[in-house]
Length: 112
Image (tube, rainbow, N blue to C red; front, side):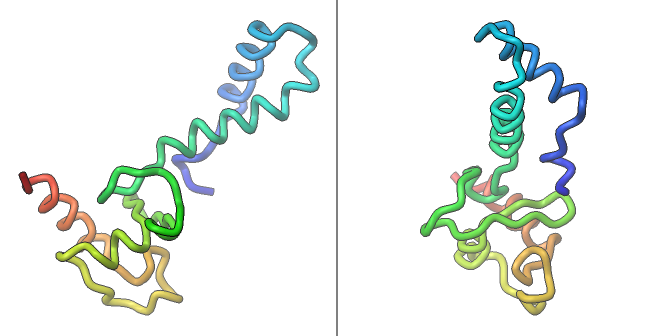
């Protein structure tokens, strides 16, 4: 599991407690809903380093993470400073080098 998406028992319990206080009740029926909410909130913090969008759709393509870099497939394909060095089937980042993606992110920050 991606460390950015890991939900600890403490955060899960805290989220359940907050929802119980807000919505009332014993919380048993809300426990699975609160866990889903926590997963969605954690997933929203994982964003593409190039476009800063967390969603996967037809335009962006799939989102992948390798080491500390997360990027959409189409962002990698259309970024002018990156090219596929490895076999996309073998690599976690669609065949793109983590170092290349980090350099492209730095280059993109310098653009006006």
